[in-house]
Figure 1 (cartoon, rainbow, N blue to C red):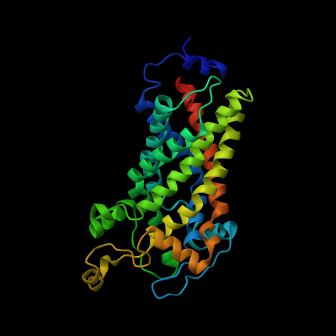
Figure 2 (tube, rainbow, N blue to C red):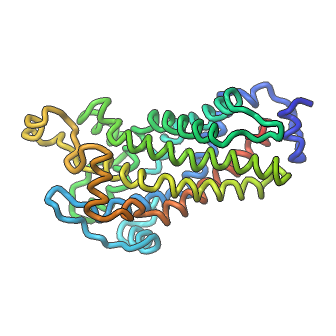
Amino acid sequence: MNSNRMVVAQRGVIPPPKHYADSVWFKYILSCCAATTAEMVTYPLDLTKTRLQIQGEKGLNGSCQPQPYRGLASTGVGIIREEGMLRLWQGVTPAVYRHLIYSGTRMVLYEKVRDRLFTTRADGTRPVWQAIVGGILVGGIAQFLASPADLIKVQMQMEGRRRLEGKAPRIHSASEAFVKIYNAGGLRGLWKGCMPNVYRSAFVNLGDLTTYDSVKRYFVNTWALSDNYWTHALSSACSGLVSAVMGCPADVVKARVMNQPTDNKSSDIKRVHGSRNRGLLYRNSLDCLLKTVHNEGFWALYKGFIPCWLRMGPWSLTFWLTYEQIRNLSGTSAF
């Protein structure tokens, strides 16, 4: 029995061999299925988190936006009361599109890098520093590719808030958002806010993939736990907490840079700056970071931390349990 079949046998199930089960394209599809499931279940928390992160920032006239909500529960209830239940899933379409690129890419790349480049010790564990480097690298690459979908998602999430404030809607659908962003800034405009997005995903991936992989292997190889639901749940709980701590500051910067107004409608500003689609609040992610800390204090970088954590925890749990089980049922080797 080969090593992959032995891992599956330890779970108590030996599925029939399938020639495609360990292929790259099949693992990519499984990753996308698991990510879509996790995204649909936890998306309202992501919307709530984004609303909390945006409120309080200074606008073009120097005044702060009103802060109608003070926490996770009141934000969620306010959205339901003022905009309707279905608005909790506003922007879910580009969020799913993002994971069709992001999650599939990061999972396949990480597994390839881990199996080909990482050092495996005699007890089956691998050096943590290698997992850290691998997680950061693949997270950044995957997010760079998926950044346009994330940009569309953030802008769609804020539409309900804009309409309540009496502002004209910017977009009505994901396809309309894509066309408008492209017409305003071309291909470069689709990657607005790309760098804080890449930084965030690198850190989140460090917390999620690296933590899950390292903790799970520690539980299985050192504590001799079975590779089952409980091990997956414990590992995903650890990865969700670390992901939230590492990724929240970059997530705040990303949301603000992506949501800021641009100069694409002002010919005067274009003539002065000589460019299109330039942000009117922040020059870049570093400028956003410094202004946020200066205007609102350091802890503003952790606005929305609780919903961020509460989302990443269930998201990691849902994703990893789904991913591990469909791999098992498909005859694919354990992650």
